[in-house]
Length: 150
Ligand SMILES: [Zn+2]
Image 1 (cartoon, protein in one colour):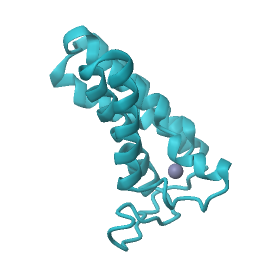
Image 2 (image 1 turned 45 degrees about the vertical axis):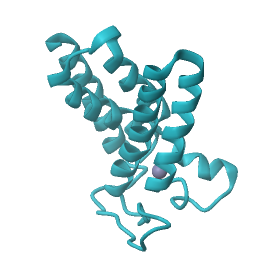
Image 3 (image 1 turned 120 degrees about the horizontal axis):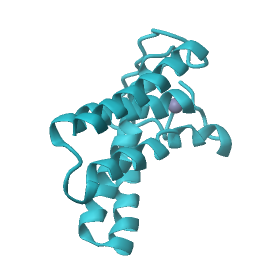
């Protein structure tokens, strides 16, 4: 899946989760949704920095590391609550990225390095324009549904 699709899928899933929660105090849920959506393509940095695609950066361990990193970053700059939100947003961004990639063809190992279990469900090609556009549009639709209902 490409950046547009990842952005949309993140927006979709987190807006859906946000429906029963509402905006939260100080619109914290909106903060999580947008921080996660912005970070949603971070795992594909592997292509740019020249490590094998869909390896280290497409793992639960990477999700935890990114969560902790943003937790510390926001914790230091904005206090404990934002530190916690930073962790949640960073962690979810990577986990949802993996969910998106699982729908495509190139297998990867989400539980690296703890387990060897290469997965992918081959529902569409990662580069599929139609699939990426559909997720992008569905993400925004779900986000606006969430905004209007909350
Ligand atoms: Zn990816």
